[in-house]
Image (tube, rainbow, N blue to C red; front, side):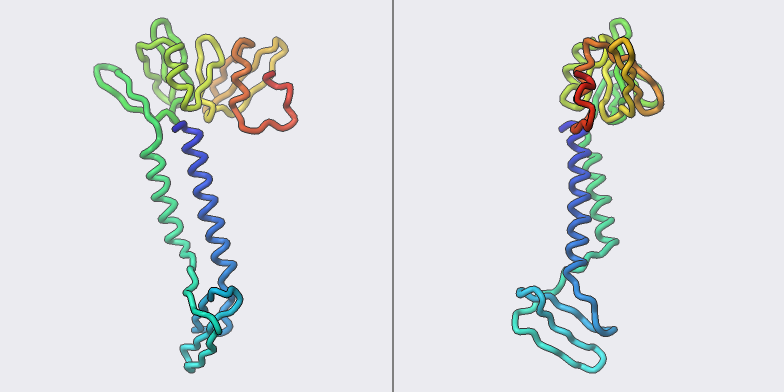
Length: 206
C-alpha cells in the first residue's frame, strides 16, 4: 500500500466518523424538559418521553430503540487508535548503513539522489548513502508514490509543494523544507502523478 493510499484511507475514515457524528446528532430531538430521557423509534418521528421528576410517561405506538449518542471523547479515542494503526501499516524501507540495518518510514523520505555508485536517501535531516543504483530504486519506490524527475533524482510526490515552469521547457520543483530540484523534459510527463485533479492546467506537463 502506497503512502498516498494510506493517507487517503485515513482521510476517508476521518470523514466517515464526522459524518456519522453529524447524522447521529441530527437524529436526536431536543429534550423538552430537564431530566427527560428521549428514545428514538423504528417509525422515525415518534418518541417516548419519560420525566424523572414527576413520573410522567407518554408512550409511543412503536417499539422503542435507544438513541445512539455520539460521545466526543470516544470519537477522539477511536481516531487516535486509527492513527496508530495507520502508522503501524505505513511502508518502511530497510537499508544497511554504518554496519547496521536501519528502518525508515518511506513517508519521511523527501527525495532520492544518485551519487556515483550509491544513492542518497534524503529525509529532512541527515541523508543516508545506500549501495544501490538509481534505476533500481526508482522501480522499487514507484508503487509507493515516488517519481523520477531527473536522470539522478527521484522525489516523493507527497513531499512536493510547488512546481514552476521554466522558459526552457523544464520545471523547477520544490519539496518540503525548501530544497529545489530540476525536472528535465525527459521526465516532465511524470509530474502528472503529483495530483489526482488538475484544474485549468491541461497543457501543464503535457
